[in-house]
Length: 184
Image 1 (cartoon, rainbow, N blue to C red):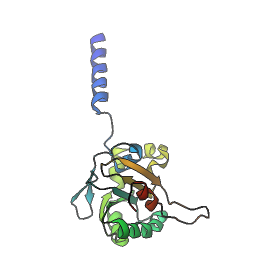
Image 2: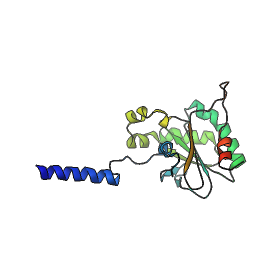
Image 3: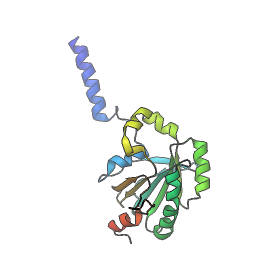
């Protein structure tokens, strides 16, 4: 019996050390990586091609949104304006999340974002992270979600939900975060 118990403990220890017990990384894991290199993720772009979030020698702004999300829709003008101003110095990546693939394709078409957009369907997230665990995670799965990675792929800033000023009006915070990275 003790030999069987030792074998079971060895298997558990091996799984823990190799990360086998860890769920696969999702785009939402950028929330957990502030101050660290973001997880190596390759998503599927709207055209079906692979879209990696790996560092490409310039900062990367990642915008998570969904077509049904009112605050996401309110954020879109800020995102478009930021791309027009910073798109030559910052890589922009949009990711439609938390809806099925057909709804995501429709939302992406409607948003008409001028940069690469991927789809991360809700069923892919639910397969990786149980819905009950998502609910217990607090803001991690709240959208809109914005992430700013530096040129080395380190997540420097993350913010969830529509940013509001003291009067309750939407405000664009991305220029302030970019300024902290030296991009004016």
